[in-house]
Length: 130
Image 1 (cartoon, rainbow, N blue to C red):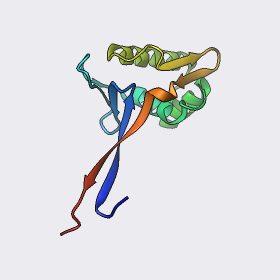
Image 2: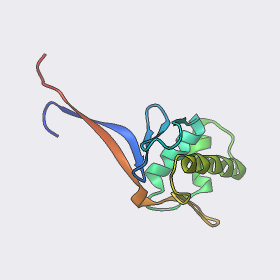
Image 3: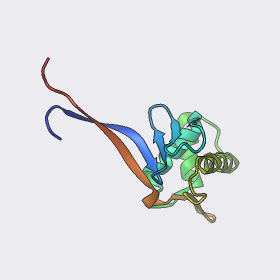
Image 4: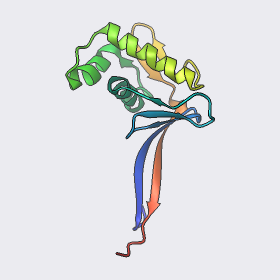
């Protein structure tokens, strides 16, 4: 990085169509299809965990329960995981994403299509003059 440049993590670009903004927990459709969606805490934690862990390997239900629900002091169950995942997939589909962007691997867990997600950054050039 050049002196005077700042690079900040913004969120994730999904299928080139939807941006997930990390700071505001908002899903924004870039092609105007559907309205922006602000995710609740648990759903945003699940999505962020999937972004960080499910593009290379399957994330199991128990891994999600431990790292999302238990870590945040919430009561976990496979039913809650299923419910949040179902609602999340529905929201993503509503914004125009394919219904298989998050894949359910039978009796194992969830996987994100790795070619459909990329990290987004912003850069700002600062003059260094005060």
